[in-house]
Amino acid sequence: MEQWVDMRTLADALALRLADLARIRWEKETGGITIDGAAIATDRESQSLITGAWVRCQQHPDVLIDWKADSGWVKIDRATVEAIADAVGSHVQACFTCEKAHADALTVLDTIAAIDAYDIAAGWPA
Image: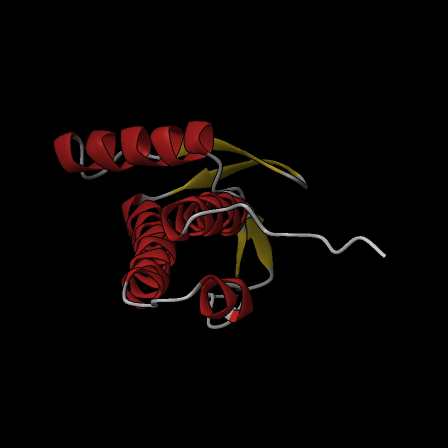
């Protein structure tokens, strides 16, 4: 009977897990959030649009922004834009912070078995 031999090096195993970890962070980061029952997209394009709306509100504090929501068009004021931008920014940062914590934990493991067994799916923001 032939036995399968794992030819990966420790560095190979770590690189694969870190790539999986980055994929999970990307999915969580860009998967969207909910604020007061409203779905807010957090893909990179939406992050950019939210940042642009925030910048506009800083330059023009009394502006009302026409925003296309899932339910249709709404007008949002500076306070609403700032709340959305803060929530999205906090979500994105939490995703990167979680990825870093997992990466730090993975890089100190000294066996392929330990790297493979480490749960990279735990602890992500909702």
